[in-house]
Length: 167
Image (cartoon, rainbow, N blue to C red):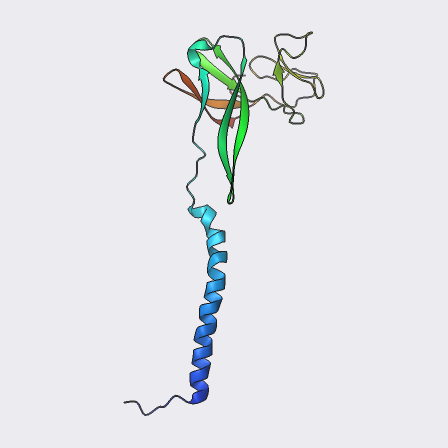
């Protein structure tokens, strides 16, 4: 046996330090988990969202396609509805974002009777060509974004938006 004895003061000091450390770790672990959890979460940035649009039904005239997906913000999960303008250019399927590059309003195909073959933004009379190119002299500062597109079993799947590659 050891000749060094633990005094009562040392024993209480060791005990209180151990209990205090255990309590501090109990309070810090949830905070550390909260900070590290998004890093450990698997990303879904490359996922394609299914739509109900059949590719065989598409023509050269843009049609509005609505789709829904689940969005998770922290611990809150909600269902979000999105929209795309979709048409065929030969055998290629084109899907454009409806978000105007001027102020983020929603553009419509043939929304202006004076320009029936263009996308029209009603907020400030912005116009876009069919391929998404902004018309010079109108408020939009850039072309409409384009969705990544995938076709499986004649159904259209939409991916993330990217800068327009059609122009």
